[in-house]
Amino acid sequence: MKALISAIVGSILCISACGVAAQAKPEDVIKFRKGAYQVIGWHNATLARMIKGEMPFDAAEFARNAEIIAVMSNVVPNAFVAGSDKGETRAKPEIWSDAANFKKAVDSFRAEATKLAQVSKTATTLDQVRSQYAATAKTCGACHDNFRNK
Image (cartoon, rainbow, N blue to C red; front, side, top):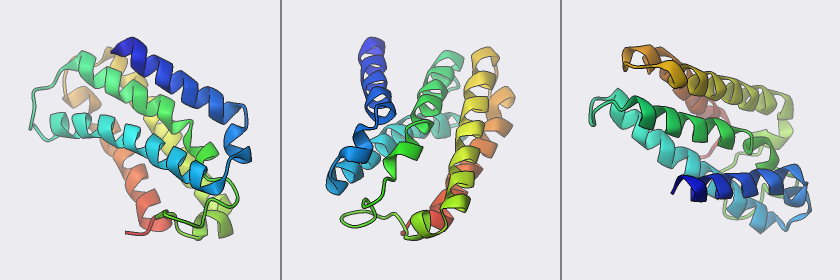
């Protein structure tokens, strides 16, 4: 399973790094973006359940999920190419009209997700990851509040 996830994440990063997203049809970029956020959401759900005490804290599992979120956070900047603002999307027009603030929000998410992955690598207790998880979640919420339609 770990090899499959690594292959999928590697493919996504390669596609986005190679500029394929910029050349794709807008509806394909929207699918790509939704897929990236589904991966982030899936792995965040596990972390959230541990933070909330809904499942036991497993340091290795927490670190694995945090690492996937950090890797996927690097896909986000490539998932909002010109023309992908129309169609079946909840992306607000402000992503493009206020690109500087959107970039700040994305950069903040990437930085906090990276810190969460780093902290998680050596954490042995939930208390050691709790504050960084909160900081990372705060960046998600800020972006949702300002740049995503409900």
